[in-house]
Length: 135
Image 1 (cartoon, rainbow, N blue to C red):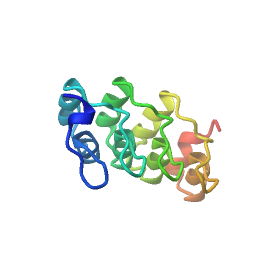
Image 2 (image 1 turned 135 degrees about the vertical axis):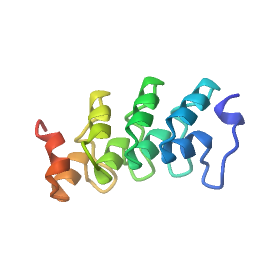
Image 3 (image 1 turned 90 degrees about the vertical axis):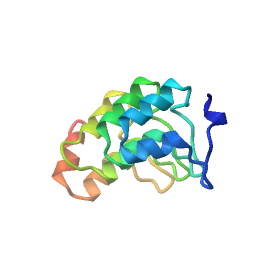
Image 4 (image 1 turned 135 degrees about the horizontal axis):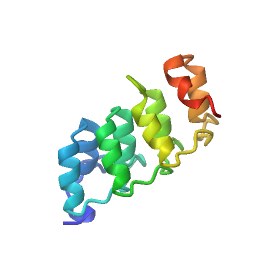
């Protein structure tokens, strides 16, 4: 089974997108083992990694990165998975650390001229900004 043979909803999201959004690591592993593409994008340009970052799903993010998910994939607004992770950061910032460790660029600006590090500083949340003291 390949990504192109998996069913998609009206927004172009397949089972891997949904499993990532739900934080279901076992389903993500199963879908990847069945040939799902970790870099497939929906109609808005979101990859499964965008969804796992949005959901603050560290285990899913790790699985996707290990499967070759691209940390540099941009949605239609130029937002990277790191931008989504910053916007939705909770807890200890594990998803941010995973993405940065995989090479995500914290200074990459979206189509509105806002980078993940600028977003972290704008929301004035030390719990988020602390992950960018080196930038």
